[in-house]
Figure (spheres, one colour):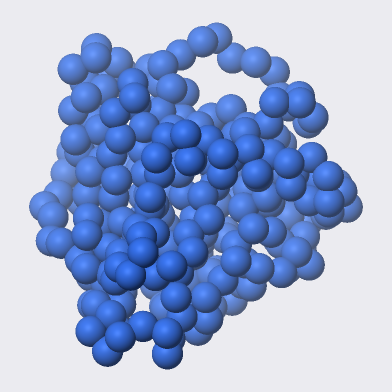
Length: 257
């Protein structure tokens, strides 16, 4: 399946291609604590490595894939929602299935190049660097790494580092050894990650894909609040408006640039 970019997001759909759409407003999150764990560990129902339970809050789901530049753009603002609104952000990995170079039409190639150019436009004001991957990645090892980091309260740190290095072409998101090294850099146990990858982590990841199917997820970044979907980086403003309308805003609002 190729990828389609209609909104500022990436879409899995039969015979579709990346098509960008210009949107207004740039969401710039406030500084987040380096060790913030903004959401509950995703798709993990067994309690393995689970942190203490929080009081019940309204939930915002954020579906993401480490190979999507628009998921990269949405990661920090999405995680910051829990600091600005009385909500619990739940990060959920979703595996995009895309076609590689040579498998797409020439028009699809044009659109892929444009989508990365557009992503760089949004990334530059935030000091982010995006280089297109040289192959199509199955990001399962990194996704399970995210689930593991979440159980340790380090999802924000892990996600930032993975996205940054992946889009600098300095990290192989499909290699468990590379993920284990990054886990160790964060001061976590690479051995525990590898054990999690071989056992509960794989099961948790599969439950995430089942959750995505139940929520009719077709691309990333994809947010769900009160059964209403919001697809794309440029839909964050709409989601924030819904949260305000629901009376969930706390503190000062981050303004669009």
